[in-house]
Image (cartoon, rainbow, N blue to C red; front, side, top):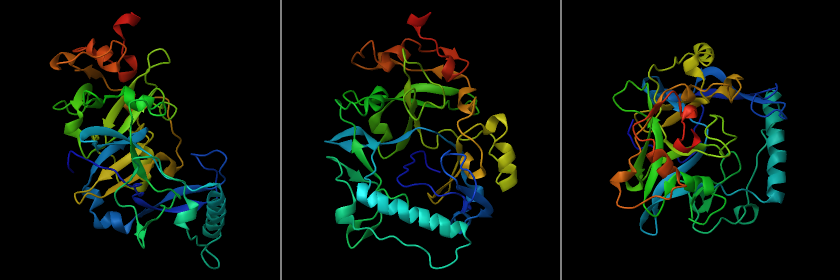
Amino acid sequence: MTDRVSVQEKIPCVFRTAVLQRQSSKRHDQSYHVGALNEVTTKALEANVRKAVASEKVDGTCVYIQEFRGKPWLWARHDVKPNKQAERRFKKFQSAHQAWEVGDKVGPEPTFTWNVDKDLKKPPEHWETARGVQRIDGQLQPSASGHVPGWVPVLKDSRSHCWHLASTDLDKGVALLLQRKKDDCNKTLEVSTVRLEELLGQTLELVGTNVNANPYGLGSKKRPVHLLVPHGALKFYTPPPFDHEELADWFATPAGQVEGVVWYCDDGQLFKLHRHHLCLTWPVEEPSLTTLPVLITVDIGQYEWDFPESSQFYLFGRLKGQQFDSIRAVQWLDDN
């Protein structure tokens, strides 16, 4: 596994999945459940997944670091979705296909054909497709979810990406990262600053107060916290078991209080297992990410410029050298 991970496409489940006629643990209004069967996929076996590096799947929103207008830049995930008419057609197809799977696949398999010129919404300015998006006759093809994955640069005046902007200073080209502290047996987290140019080509997960209903309980309304977690940075100190039944038991342990597991294979392929694949709920009361001590090593004095006193860089910089029981337990100097 390389240090620079770039997640461009939806990661497949490591086990073969099937649509099961039972209440979804992920969507309460959904009467079916996509569950993992006790069978590793052929692709995963061919990639030697049992020898892969296992890392925590983090619950946030994906971002990408690549150049924009000649500078290292933060890009937000933006999927081009179908318009209302196409979405209704696609949902009707999905329902028919799910009924076909649950009904022991009796009769011909339902199919769906996209009219790309008419079915998709117009992408925003500067939008770029994610790597690996399928094309037929030169036209982009939506994924199995009905979306075309891609990226948009985060503009400095963007209200829709204000929490993305809290984790970076685009003018200065630096980002705030949360990851495991090196040379510490992965037992301590660290909040630090990294130049965007060092992250070029890499994807990360934005987590924080106003992202995905904040499953990690970070920050508060008064003092929101938003940080970037590099993909693959939260490797397990003790790798989880690979057996289907043992994994279900492992998710009940303190170390298994995670959204899921991602396996990073030597050939670059990625495979995942979400708690929902095993009918387990998420979020949990005490995620393992919030049980580790965290060291603040943000050193804003190393830069030639000043940060605004309201910025996270300044606030974390004032805590340089301090260690807290967890990322939830960070105490700001002006809150004492």
